[in-house]
Amino acid sequence: MNKLMILIRKSKNREKYFLYASYVLNVIIVSMFYMVATGLSNITNETLSTNDYEQIMAILGSVILVSGLTIVFFQWIISMQFQALFFSRKQFNNNLRLMGIRKKSLFGIYIYELFYMQLLAFPVGIILSEIIFYVLAKTLNLNEKIITPDKIVIAAILHLIVITASVFITFIKLMKHNIIEVIRGNTNCEELQTLGIKQKVRFTLGLASIIITIYIKFTAQSKQMEVMADMGYSIAILLAFDVIMFYVHKVLTIYAKKYRKTYLLFSEQISFGYYKKVKVVCLIAVYSITIFLGLQMMFKTVRNAGLNVADKNINYTYCIQYDNLLSMDEADKNDQVLYGLRFKTKTSSGSNVYVNGINTQFLSNFETININKLLCDDNSFIKNNMFDDKNWNGIIMPDYYISANDIGNSIILNIDGKDVSFNIIAGYNTNNFGKMICYVSSAYLKSQLNIDNMYNIAYIKNPNNLEDMIKTRFGTVQSKEEIAQESYNKAVSGTKLVEIVSIFIIICAMISLINFFAITSGANIINISRLRGAGMSEKNITKIYIYQAIIPIIVANILAIPLAIIFERIGCYLMLPADYFVYGMKYKPVSLLVVFFAFLAVSIVTQVITIKKVLYTSYYIDILRDVSI
Image 1 (tube, rainbow, N blue to C red):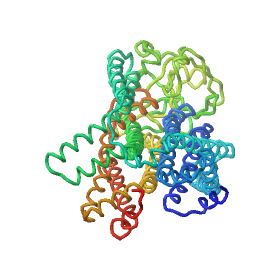
Image 2 (image 1 turned 180 degrees about the vertical axis):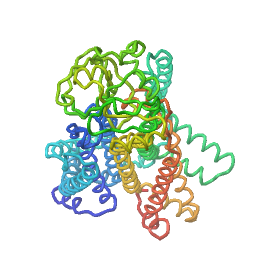
Image 3 (image 1 turned 135 degrees about the horizontal axis):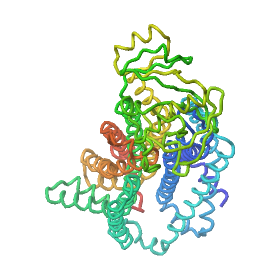
């Protein structure tokens, strides 16, 4: 038995090399995404150039969710790859059992091989993980530059648990075969896929999910709740996946028969015989395309919102921020210019905040401030001109920073060396993602700081007034376009991690797809040998297997489009309140086409390469000599 273990360990075949690659990739994925999901909570507003920890976590929330789902999904892929390798050795396993080797001993052989492979796969995976994460950390200026040891230990444990469980589950499935039936030769053929009770039950649950979703959307009390209900559609699509796939292939089979598409018909019959393999290929593409497109569209929508909020709601052309306080007695009196106050300070949590002292004229003519009704449905303080009241200590803050529980609470800010107390009245939709701006009564701020008749910021509606003002007093000039660009740039920096994660997922998925095709190529080789032995030409066989490569990717893209749109909508509304997306969601047809053709190319090229030897050489004759086929 020990000699047998050593021989298996030393055996060299293509499938084993690709399984090594899968193990290394799995270690990288688990380590990287576990670090992203749990190790970035100490990011500050300086490291991501965003406004506050709460906003950062809102942005990272979608990434953390995706990271968790990605870890789970790739564990499923690695288990499918191992099962494929296990069943590709079915004849070898049967021969060992016919030789009298016990099931327990056979299980031990595979466990030994599995753990021996980790001696190389795990160190290589960890080294590559550290390199990739270091590059990511440098790119995003993250505090953490390495994957911490505790994350590596947990990644190792999770990796080993998953692959051990895969061996155990696969072994149980394999041992269900009766060895007597193997002797009789009754287990060599794969059964054609049919719709069983499980598939029908899932489909029924999917229909129920659609009905429940429609009901929730009609009765939703808020836009967020309505959008979150879309998750039901995603669940319905996934539950109905087997039925959708079955009828897609059924329709293609009927079409091929009716219009005499011989090679398409051959391809569809192979798909029905190897349905699990086709399903895995399709699911790999569906998940990765959904996440990639969803994240790509999500960060484009958020960036678009960052640009549009400033462009739509800011009514002045320029603002000038002065370094020192200036007297209103020397200011140019003009209805196209408004003077106010702005001080930079920090909250108790250390976040940078700008306190803007404004009046009613500012709200009426210079900037539109949209109050978040979910946080405060009473905006009477605006109607009652409270921003002109020197005794009113209200403050309105960006809605991404506060919650409904904060309304009515007091907050103390150190402004120009003095502690000033404010009462949080409401949250508003920010007009500049680049700065966390809070609005207070200019009259109240002046009374607290004893700076009556002073200003340090000017808002200019008519550009002709700008030249005259900068000639007399020096200050930092910022145009409306520059403010919009500042807001956009902050949205870009805040979503850069999302963009990188989406690209990393799609690359890993393509590598996994290549590995899966390579590991499961054994069945293709046997079938091609039979077809060549029956006299079919290489050209016609190639047509059959190109259909095999193309159809799952096309189906996956069709299913991934609605899933990606739903993912984008939910992700956006998790990150920011609904009012930020009145400008509409942004879609990326170019990204869809790029990822579609990329998957198509990977699928076709890998399929052709894995069957090249048996297709274009006499190797098929050696396969046909095997009495087991």
